[in-house]
Length: 377
Ligand SMILES: Cc1ncc(COP(=O)(O)O)c(C=O)c1O
Image (tube, rainbow, N blue to C red; front, top):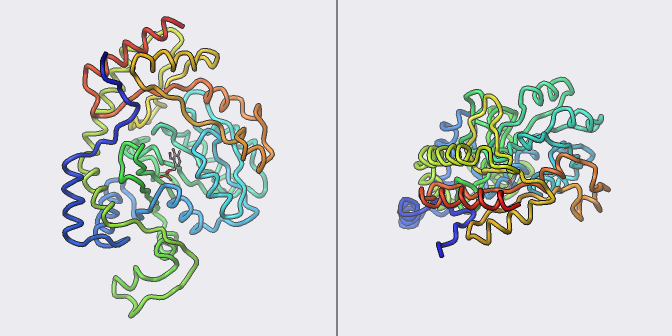
């Protein structure tokens, strides 16, 4: 029997071990110290943005950004229900209300027409998720935001390295957030990033990032001692993890190249497999292939997943829609049936293993296992 092919394996090794050992030897442990500053500078340069802040998670980056943008009780924030729970919870924690809009069946991203249908006079923010590193329809969403006076914040948790019309996803709105969680293709174990080109927002969030103090200004020699100057929280991340992140950044281009090659192979060799819908990149988007998301008819999906897993290949489903979850129903009064595309996509999704360490033989085994499971359905 061949060894199992897990769904995901973080791509870490010697370079990361060396970076961590060096940071420890140099005593670089503090939050937002010189390694974090360097990491932020390199990420800002890679992404082509003016400001980047390293945080404990994408969720923390989002909370920090929304605090800086002045999200307040009574505000409504439109986001997809086909997403990770923590962003909706961050909205709720600030006293505002998440409002879920339906997605498009091809990109699995917010459908601009569905967004327009849920806007109210209280809507202040739109938070599109670039699912799987595939671009949302930013032309239409940006136009809608401009027309209705809404602020766009990109959830690029899964999108580091993906581009749209040559620009990085996550850098195309007022602010963007990324996740460096261990399940992501670029990882610091736990971690995230907030980016913006807005200098006024950056000045605010710099203080909020440092627990509401002007420590950053103090470290630049602009004030004699630092003190409590605004609301904020402990949004900084240890320099140890910045060291890890810089080692990951060194392999990001290779990581993306290998992912793109694997995705191209899957798309070529699985084309035409009956009952299996393959992912399609929208026009103008170069995905990072964080996820290779296929669809199988809902009534056959679970049997298909079981058949592939029984052959030692760990394919997996994904998000349960938030609106029909226990908390969505109880807190927001929502019901199953409200967002038909979201529900159908969630019930149909199958994600294939895709990561740089996959050997050619393993990629071939994924293809043949998926082909035979699809034939058996
Ligand atoms: C779309 C999306 N947004 C936000 C998050 C939250 O990321 P983190 O765990 O870094 O807070 C995730 C994590 O999976 C995600 O997939």
